[in-house]
Length: 310
Image 1: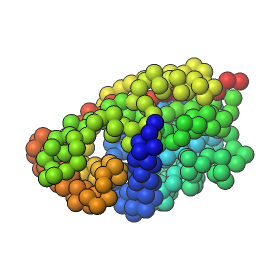
Image 2 (image 1 turned 60 degrees about the horizontal axis):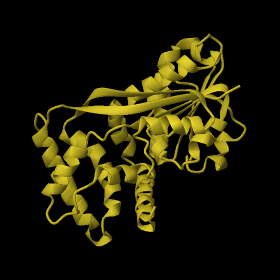
Image 3 (image 1 turned 45 degrees about the vertical axis):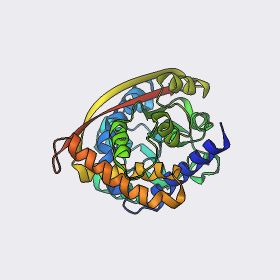
């Protein structure tokens, strides 16, 4: 990989981290995005339970230790508690919810209190520095979940996460197979005034996935196997999601455009970003049912699960 490509990826990664950590509104916007991510959280939990040790099959009084990395607003937590039931049957459930975003952790802490998820423990955990995370020291888990964050982590992360599992514990990850908004993005670029060159989908993928093909089922399978896991199961599914009106869509896409803008010349970035947001919103309104109406997008994701050998 060229040094310029590496620099671009580094800038994109920095933009993601800055938006995730420093934007106080990120949790509210991502809570809306959970409409798209939660169906895949449900798939991760279901697959993990199918392959899981007895402690994840919900016998009352069992102890269940779960680590959710990149927890966001709590899609995995909602699905774990939903699968295990409610009341005293969840007394043994312990979920370490880790993220680098203080707004996300604050949001999930309040949500857990409201929902009665007593076992949720929110902690700052940086997935790029797992070995240095105090919250992980001396811990072992029945299940580790990484929902739509695995592609932002270093190549060594899957093996490091697998090492945190108890024997017969499961690692479940999810990633996007397609970018449903890419055709709209390309049209928005075309409408910009003296803007950047038209986007190439592989370059967009590279910007948001550290250059690794997490959109490829075969890569997901191979990566989990190389992490030392067995019974690796990978599924690719489509879900239709009501993403709300144009303003709601732009709340999420503004985050994406901000990441992509890190590849633009610094002296043009601010003006281009404002124009890109204008153009993208215009395209969204025209391509769907109209401003103020609900919109449906089809999201296609990949879920991969593997089990740590005895």
